[in-house]
Length: 202
Length: 379
Ligand SMILES: [Zn+2]
Ligand SMILES: [Zn+2]
Image (cartoon, rainbow over all chains, first blue to last red; front, side):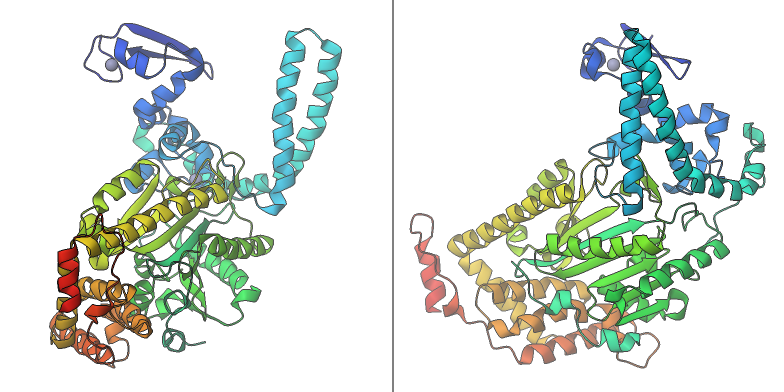
């Protein structure tokens, strides 16, 4: 069996990781495993490696991920144009994009300007992430009373966030027509049916 | 306001002054923004593009800084007018190719311009003379904040501002400086610089043509990445590199003066001779020769009050600018070449011959080859 990275040397390191309930395997040779930092478990993420190897193929295997549910843009369209269809495409193709963005940029999280109206909500979601971490810790340490109170805080915060996202949901509902058209696209065969084509500009 | 009235004046970034403007011609910051929930222009249907255009254009036009402005749909501009805007760096080549559903808005001083429905719903830029990226960013950042009230920009919690192309996601910001680097080109150091700058996530590109083929020795230095750093961090990094390139260029010129003064004077003299007497000249040759004249002004060989004339020629000799005053549909390449030569001859008539004696002699005897610098002073 050959190494998944260099495809030339014999694979000697076999890795398995469960991501989102799916088992992913990767086989590496000695030198590639060292280069990818497999020996250092903190520095290694199998998902990154897999996405780096063939993010596009990963998405192709998953028919539901083939099209953006909001605008109907497909992975094939992206390959052709190098551009995405709408802002929701970033979530629809998140898995494949994350590896690509990592290679393209200096970081994977935006640290710059935030529109004024979103600043409060953004702070809240950061808080939410922190609360969830402390909830998990409380559960692990069997501090159940503390866990219950953290859970309450999370619920309140989540409701606030949800209210702010109501607008986004409204947008998604408005595009339900596109959804309806794109939904039957479950198999490769029906891919070319009734999806809006980019309008060529004169 | 009419486009003809705006383009009758040279833009501020060309005629104005700014720090280090001899070598750093201009500084520019461009932000890409899209409206929440609307398909990007390349994927949107025409009706959707038109709706976005109306919304964005109205928001831009009501900005206080755009009180004195020009605003037009691209379909209502002639090919020549669009090309003039491209040559002035006010819209991109890609934008000029767009038809229905796209527009351009700019202020009279041409420091702010907005491309609506280019690759993104909105691309806005601020541009000024010299090295002043911080000031230019402050300008466009303020405009962006003002627009936030009227427009809902697509913003992702982790990825920041969302753009049609993943290479712009995050800050959506492209900051750049246009640099005139004849010293680095003559001393064959420019490729080394390009390579080392590229390694740190910034890009150096020829303004017209890539790498060493860059016409007029004009290069654009810009950030390549937009995600993972703040706008200030990106500009800080860029500023540092621009200062280094600036220093390298100054050093390269100094060394040329010390070690190859004769070659340098020969090049500047020939450039002057050809430009003053040519009757047909291509855009490429004109830019390359004008670059030597520009360096000559920097070195004091020509009076500094000629600087603007020379800088303007870099733009005025471009194909669309040559034709803009004429009532003809389209000139052929040959006609343009002779028109260009005539324009240059007229403009340079006001400019005296290079004053060889004015060449700055350098006071470091250890490195200067005295024989060559003496010859140049005597002749
Ligand atoms: Zn290998
Ligand atoms: Zn989409």
